Image 1: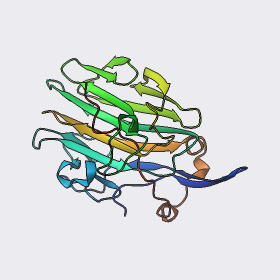
Image 2: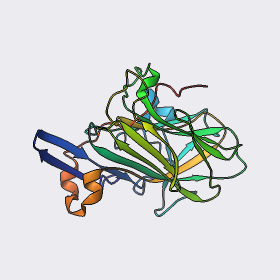
Image 3: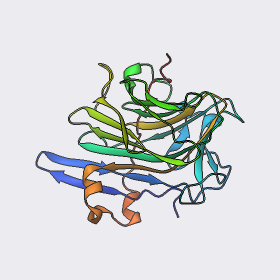
Image 4: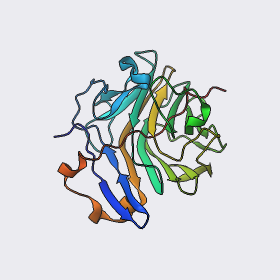
Length: 249
């Protein structure tokens, strides 16, 4: 059994050539509580630093018995990265369930990057999505385009980012509330790609994530595209999205 389940992968052949379409799903069920996701199924710490990789938890879970914990309480920070490949055109949706407990301070971040390379993320335009969860204020903000929503504390809430790489657009939703919309690119160095996801905190707080999903429009619209798991291993996704060392205010 694989550590996380890559449940959607397909290859489509269009009029202009062959386009690889890749999907990903993780419920963290097969990991052990306390396991650090470094070098496991594509997960690692930022810049491939193991001690900031995410930790598997069984303390707060959604549908399975495990979740991914992002915390700065027992360690200086968590900076959990999962790279993807193949998402370079068309429409994509990135979603996750998130749990934030009340009584916390500081901020925790949900980040998507259009370019990512260990120790080479030196341009702010590599970041396309930065949702900042300000726990003291009880608000989630889009740091790049403006817009906010109230955080649902002490319960699981949904995050969804809808991206059209061909049209260069993005929409951010929290608990089905539209926070913001605008261009996917954030500068001249931005790339039309979904390269990596980064779940980060440098503060004394904790967030839990479950049911992390990356899907193309065609995968979402057709269950018939879901292949047997044996076919999934042939299509590694590469990296979701991130931004050059959390853009500071």
